[in-house]
Length: 199
Ligand SMILES: Nc1ncnc2c1ncn2[C@@H]1O[C@H](COP(=O)(O)OP(=O)(O)OP(=O)(O)O)[C@@H](O)[C@H]1O
Ligand SMILES: [Mg+2]
Image (tube, rainbow, N blue to C red; front, side, top):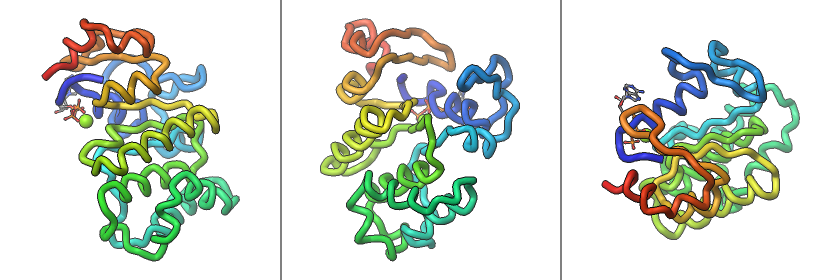
């Protein structure tokens, strides 16, 4: 968590290998992956949903999912159905071009696309930012179920304190590129944390 521009996205990009680490190490499952290319991190089980719910706008919903499936290592096509089970709203839209979906539907597609690689760690950057309120709860519930029912680890950048408090075991607050506070999810309601996040 942290105010606008403190480096949350930059940190996630570094964790995924989209940006090189200038210092420090990235460790996944006890293994140093600091210099590993992004596609190999995906192969290890890291799935990334970048900020801004970007999809391939000229491809259909199904094609968006298939592109990720074809780039991945799993030959099991049932992963596409598994991803769609998480967001039933997408099933009647499979033949629609992603560019014609609403922002909320595009975000659901972006998360479903990351699930096609069967990640063990799902990394999400402000998944409900700019999404119409009626779909925010659906996206939050899906993330919570992926964590509690399918056992996915979740690394989430989130601006909504209530959702972060409900979901998080641990939290970290950044300011100007530096960790300024860390703690257990329940402590998110402390005055001090609220002060660090206030605009
Ligand atoms: N550790 C750092 N040291 C120096 N500059 C940084 C660091 N982390 C990020 N920056 C720079 O700060 C700017 C904002 O970073 P970034 O987009 O990661 O912030 P953010 O917290 O995701 O913002 P937003 O809330 O708007 O999404 C970028 O120009 C980035 O290059
Ligand atoms: Mg950001």
